Image (tube, rainbow, N blue to C red; front, side, top):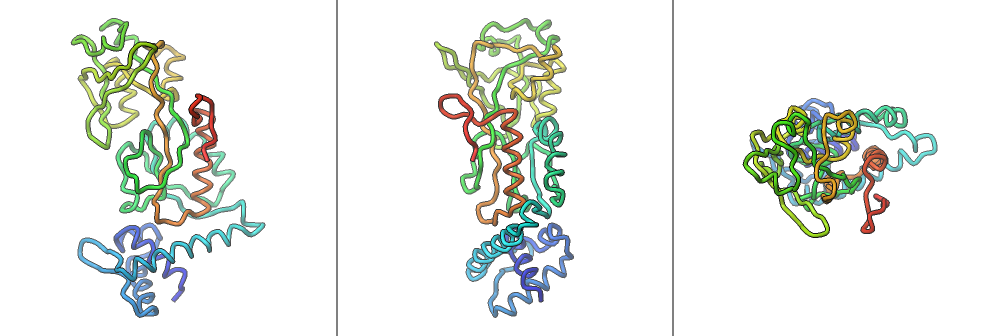
Length: 313
């Protein structure tokens, strides 16, 4: 029995809650993973896992052993990459999940520089706006906008996305240009609704100026749960949009979107990279998070209380 392979298999089964999912992420057969864990239990003379037809959970001994194992795996990873010839070459597979507009407009176009810098890292990128169960789906990290609701996750803030309000010329020609945010609550105006994954409902947007603080929700004829579809709906003239500047910039420049309420301010949307609290942070994950922060600093840097760019670490 290879003890390293056995410990790695055991840790992945605990994190995935399934021998099948663990085998998929380790690129092993389910039989191999099962045998490795059984051999580990035989060596230790301790039952590490409770197995049912629906779920695999760590026993009390298994949970304690898991905490030691993930620290050991992290130390081994750091030992390998701390060698002079290996320090700049972290390697292995990373599973990440990224919102679709951010992937299409910023991260994927910038990936060649990451691949050049770290040629031995393989990225499996899920592109979606849904809530990903990091543990059950065995994802190394997710990039998400908005305040994180799951306080059990570790997270690093990597950007403050500046927001604006926009509409297509075709919409404004049909409905008129709203002079005040409250006009969006009138019966003849429409917004494009965004169905947030946490609630499945559109949420109001906060706007501020020197005299007023407003919460505007508006009426919609279409609500979607995908950022790219949201933008497409606005470009098609289906309603007013609230967009991060990185999504609106090119369309504003060519006249496909017109900014509204420019004397009003919207609070920036924080962007985080979140990852499991109980999984060792490998060098490959650390360099990926650092790279995301580096890329986002060029587009939407984290701001301090004075409104100046701040350090994201």
